[in-house]
Image 1 (cartoon, protein in one colour):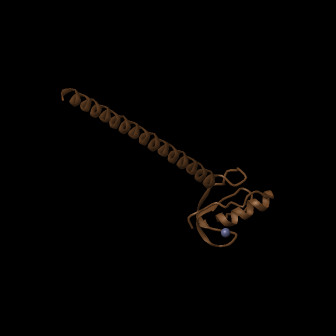
Image 2 (tube, protein in one colour):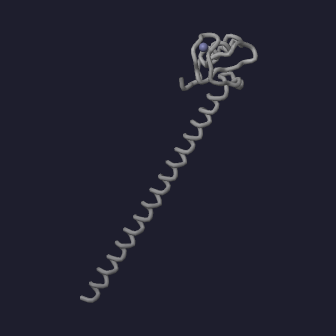
Image 3 (cartoon, protein in one colour):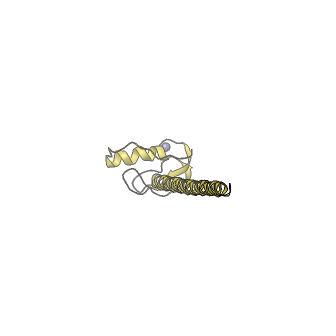
Amino acid sequence: MLMQDVVSWAQQIYILIGILLAATVGVGLLLVVWTGAKIALLMYRQRRGREEYRRAFYRADGQHYPPYIEGICEACGRGHRQIFHPSDGPNQCPDCYEAHWRRATGWAGDSESRTTGA
Ligand SMILES: [Zn+2]
């Protein structure tokens, strides 16, 4: 009778240890997955931020955009929050300036256009 109780107790202890071990491994795995997801998200946001910065300040050919200020485009006559003041042409809105520098440099690269808030 007593021997049977001891064996039963030992089995319960083993089961308890197994459950704790499984829980620990599960929590560790969850932490690893969570951390990995956070790192992936951070890297994605960093890449997006770099691309956004590059698009905002550099033309598709890698040159800096000229300084800009709010005003009226001398090419199309529209008012815009960003009117570029290039040294080699009239003051232009982003759409006109894109066409201007691409024509001037003969750029045949990607047609990716600068995104501006109207
Ligand atoms: Zn224009």
